[in-house]
Image 1 (cartoon, one colour):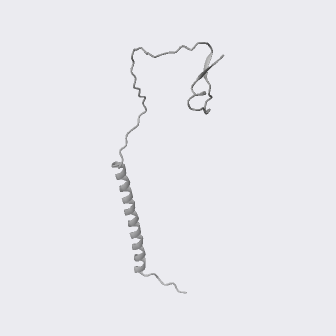
Image 2 (cartoon, one colour):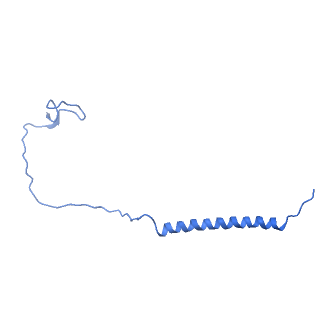
Length: 102
């Protein structure tokens, strides 16, 4: 079989296609880099730097506290008749009443 020599027009055509592809890739890369630079230089969101701080609103005042107190006779520790989470009926029979432990 005889090899046919390539014509000059076929080589330049392939070289032209390769050059066009490389130029297209460089242009697209340039557009991407430009877009990223614009996002960094002119961000669409506004950012604020957060600092760790403790804030306390307090008022120091001198005063007198008045309330009606009721003396409970006896001693020991006071506790509730109903346990935590226990159901009680409305209107009496255990809810909110206190008992004395000795």
